[in-house]
Image (cartoon, one colour):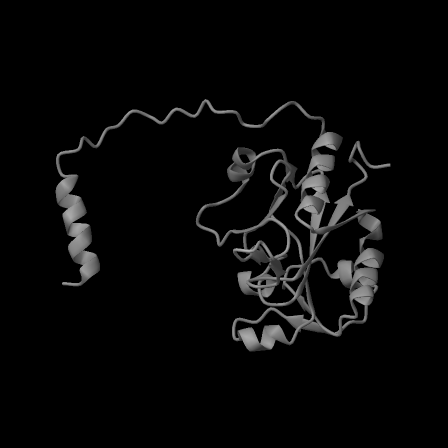
Amino acid sequence: MSSRERILGRVRRALADVPREEAPYERDYLREHGARSVPETVELLAENLADYRALVHRCAEDELPAVLAGLLAARGSRSVVVPPGLDEGWLARTDVPRVADLAEATAADLDRVDSVVTGCAVAIAETGTLVLDGSPDQGRRRITLVPDHHICVVRVPGQVVSSVPQALERLAAARPLTWISGPSATSDIELDRVEGVHGPRTLEVVLAHGTTDPGWR
């Protein structure tokens, strides 16, 4: 018997006399803090993303190919990882060589790639957080952790919510969720900030506004 099995056995014995039927959890906590309009929610997202040192850009959806091409060119990217389900039109204006999101790709392979472009599952305004869930336009988790430059496209307003509870309603717990609040960073005891330790050093977020967005233009 392994140590794990021994510990779990003790837990089961300790809980043997605990009633299985329990009262439902109270979920009367605030679902969001304050009442905001859609444009105000998007503004809060942009502010909090910038506060985490993400670089925030705005454009209409039909301007997205030109914006992405410009960001890759400004970065000097010579290669970009592309998830299999990313909208092909998004990268139509750039000739940067594309690298497929392959299961056999190693960390060393991805470390040689300059950038990655993905979509997202949901963006949370109150925390300035992007959530990726491994959907086809986001790819495997590792492609957003190893390359030094991540461009994440958020469709506005459809993918923007105010709060974490609202985001959780849209997410499936069984999916590989990655929660991103700014570029990867850590600080030592002297509070010296170092970026790029366990993820991209640079995070750029493109808020792509649809024509139905009441706050766009």
